[in-house]
Length: 638
Image 1 (cartoon, helix red, strand yellow):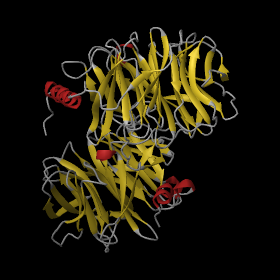
Image 2: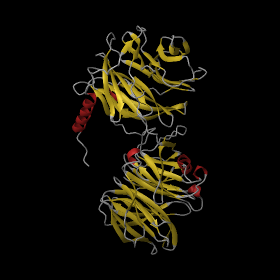
Image 3: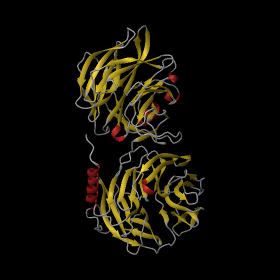
Image 4: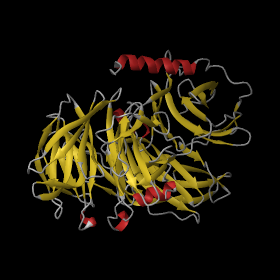
């Protein structure tokens, strides 16, 4: 499918925003805003506490000449951290309060905890950025990792991991750089929905995915006229359950948006008569509506808003499991890593190997700690698989076969059964014009096959033989799917072959060469599997076999029972490991799993996946390892 021109995409976004903004100037019936107190002069940064905290009397946090303070409703100080700060965000929970701000003298972002005894933690300072920090906001993901987003001039931004499980890290970790709109100085996040909201002063408000592994894609919430309903300047925002409140500073006006199944819907505009360029807003729900703090050029104003948007139910988040190990990077830059295979050392399983393709350069071999042991620069290898006990002349070797896109060939490697060292033993030509995926099959008689596919849907199955001392292949079967496949995996015990048609379904066929291939659907695209369907792998357990699918469309991994009717047993994501400083995995192409006891945390086997977006720090793609025990425990597998 051809990409849409940028001008057309912009037009679609503008049309979307205009549609959402239709009728926005009408104030909903019964919606009233009353500013209840005169301005508290000199105050610019304050937030109402939102959430269930340990202090019944605490009402807000604010920055003033005395520093960072926790206050009750009467303005009495409950806790204070001295200093000069600007910018403010918080997260409140039963064990205490997490605060983010910028220390003016250092010009560094600072995170600090206040525990339930009102004792401050040691501050955590982020390294000084190369840009002046104009705005910041906190984000807590579904795995309870805490992040801070930093906004700078000219569209520069960063995301940092600062805490996990309610506690600050000893050292913050930069997750990724962000290319944001220029003139962005305000942000807010929706933890439940995993969304980041950013203003673009003279353009409007934008929404981005907030998760560390998400792509940087934006959608408009509202734009400045004539494309939307904003009059002049998009400024601060606040979120409440079911509602978004946004300031048009120079109008001045407060825009209300109500959550709907199709996105944010305009729900009216309230004039802010008497306020002078209000830029900052804090909000929290009450039984009567929404309580507000509004900051303008004169100071801080309290207000009450009779507005009660209804929050939509959020889907239960997909469980996130922390990656245990990451490999070193593949040698090539860009989209290079693709498909892994696991070779189990028959003499010492702890010395097993992970083979990973570099589809721009060759094959890389890693140990179980992720260290690179070999790099075979033999060409553009896309997918790889392994089988044991292949006769090569007078010897038995283990065999790895990869699809070589430079030559549309099967590329074979002998694996020394003692050392695990790979040796290039040659190629077998295929008639495919654009070879792509590959997997191997060994039947009950011990005959080894390689099965490759083409982007046009064609599959070719080769019987492999090496008794002469040189590998040979005989084409024994062809079959075809209607559209592009890639991932496949063979069940040697059951003599079945699972194949993935990327935009359609996973199919199963008889793997035996002498039997015609008659695809039967295992699971189709549309939930819980989202296209593209990428890697497939089989786990052979004592209590049952499981098919693992890379559901690339929503960055998850779906587990099915490997026997009909192929019941869905669950799905999971691979998230970051804050303790070990390993990022999660997303946009996964290939994956592999073994049930072999490899020792230690791998006693029930391991899953290896390609990581399409390297974060923390950003860099060249690699592979992530996850113990099967973590998957089994999370999904309740046998």
